[in-house]
Length: 389
Image (cartoon, rainbow, N blue to C red; front, side, top):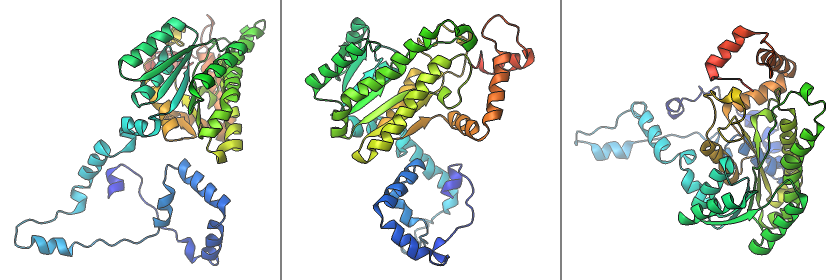
């Protein structure tokens, strides 16, 4: 009844593995192995389920109300059938108990007293992440190139009762990254959370980049080499603290499209680096959260005229909450439902996905070339308010 009230799927037939020959004994033996326990917990975490609830899956429950009925006898008060108010109870849960709707409390429990470093925090998503983290009680280390803007953000956070420290650095310079790491370790002792948000994007077709290899070099330097170098410099302190590293990525990593080859390659590389980090250091408490954001309304998208009318953009505030959800809930991958659909489709039907993207590219050419599919272009433009990429 509660599943129905929540809009969930119908339950299928129950499966009892205990009735299978030898299954109960084998399961008991496997459950004693530490490696199996870790895999079980990781699998349930991916499903968003608590490991403590696994043993309750096949419990048969019987609810009786004899004592209640006896207490109410003669009062004229009767117990209504549960199905008549299950939706009311579920709405109460949604409004007051659902952890996803109690973000401030969750953030405070996880971040109070922690040191959180956010790159690219003078504006956009990084700015909003820094504000939310400071409101949750974290000591926020602000990193960006513009020292004046950075100090203004720090003052704003301090005025609101938070703690913030500005560390101006050009992350495209390896020397400045090293100096930043040294300053952070000397002044703050290390970090508990490292959020790689700073990035540069280039929208240009590959065929138009034949003589612009430097675009790929400078994008890779800031978007990939910089976060990797900073991570390596701060990794000892992160290992000591069982820290979290958050990679702010793009939905384009899940379904790479046209025009952003230089940018998407850097984010895909950072994503793979995060996978290797988790594979090597998860047992020490290190956590890596990969956040795949859809198009977000920031200064980065402003130069692209084709995006001016897009109605499906994400706000920086919403993007910041996705980033911190990954940190405080220790979620391995954070994406929108549409992102999950794209990721699934790209894995299962890659040839079809490539063909769809190619058709869309021909419908929305990057230059003044006439669209090969003007009707499709008009339909999509009307639906989302601009070019899909």
